[in-house]
Image (tube, rainbow, N blue to C red; front, side, top):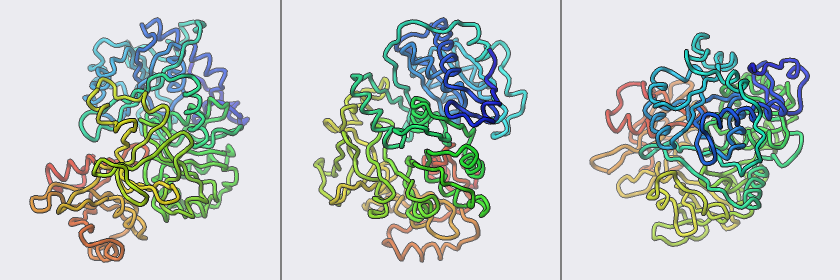
Length: 523
C-alpha cells in the first residue's frame, strides 16, 4: 500500500475527500485506510479505551488514524509537535499511549528515546509539508527499524468487526499553569452527542451540503480538528494547508471555489496585509467564514466584513465545553465586540468575585452549563476537575459580561489579568487599542512581578516602522486610564507563537519575570 497521490482527481476538482499539495484522498480510500488502520492498531494491542498518540502535521494520516482508532473505540491524542521532548514524554506517560504515530522528521532520536517500548509508526513527511517547513529530504524518510505507515497498513486486512461507540479525541491544554492537562469527554447518550455535534455544525456552517473548505489551522488543536472531521463527515472537500500562508490560501479559494473557512484573528491580520492584486481575486464563492480562538480587534473584523461581505461568523468555545456562543456579521455590527449569544442548549452565567451570579453589564468569570458539561473532566486529575466546576457549571477561565440583550463580551483571560496596585487590569483592552494603530502589526501586554505595585504592565510591540514610546502612551491616554498604560514598551522581542498564530504569553511572562529583558530570543 503506497501513500495516496491521485493527482488526476485534483486536476478534476473533486467535490469530496482530502487534497494536500498534488495528492488526493477520496472518502472511499479514506475508509479503506481507516479500516486497515483499525486492524493494524488492534494487532499492536489497541482496543476499547486505549489511547493512541499522534505527532502529525496536517496530513492524510491524521484522519486515517483517527477514523481507524474510532472503529476500535480507542482514543486519539493529538500532540502539539512544537512541544519539547520532555513535554511529549510527559503526555505519552500521562495518557499511557499504546502507539505513537508521527511524521518521520518529528521522530527525532530524542523523541524515540522517551517512547519506552511503545509501538512507533512513521509517516513519511510529504513534499508539501517539507517545503513549507524547510525540512531536508533525508529527514522525511522513516527512521531505520521504524515501520512506515502505509506499508504497515498494507500488511493488514480491513477491519470488519461490529461497530463500537467511538471515543472522543483527547486534547491536552497548553499548560499555562503547570504541565498540560488532558481534556476527556466521557461518552454520552447518542441523542445528546448528536445534538452537540449539530450545535458545532451550525456554528461553523457545516450543516449545509457541498462544503468545500481549507484547513488553515493545525489539527492538534481541538477546534480545527473537529472542524476538519466535520467537513468530511458531511461529505465535503477539505484542502489541507501545511501551515497558514495568506497568499496561498487566497489562491486556493479561487481555484477550488471554496465555500467555507475556519480561521483565527491573526489570519485576518495577515490576509489584510497581502498585495492589492491578491485582494482583487474573486472571493464570491465564500458562504460561511467561522472564526474564534482569540479576540478579534474591531477594526480588523470590520475590514474583513467590508472585503468579504456578511459571511463572517464568530464563535466562542473551549476544549472543555464545545461551542458556547455564536455571532453573525449583522449582530456583530449592531453589537461591536461581542462574541454573540449563547447557542441553543447552552446556559451562560457570569460568576462574580463574591461567588454569586452577576447581572447585565457586570464583569466576572464566564460559566457554562449544557447537557454535555457534566461528562467533561481532566484526565487523571480529580483536583483540577473539581477546580473546573462551580456547581453544575464549567468555569471557562475567561472574564466577561452579558449585556441587556443577552450578548456575551469577553474582557480577558483570568490568567492574563494583571493586579497592579490592587486594581484589576485586562491586557486585551490595551492590546485592542494598540493593534488598531496604523503602524502596529501585533502586540502582547502582560504583567510581571513588581516590588511596589505587585505587578507592572509590559508591552511587546511588532511594528512596520519605528514608533516612539511617547506616541504610544499619548495614544493610549486618549482611551484608557493612566494606570492601564504599560510601564515598559519593548520593540526587539520576537513574539512567540503557536502554529495557529496565537501568542504564547506564558513564555513572555517567564522570560521577563525570571531574567528581565535580555534580547529578542524569546522562543
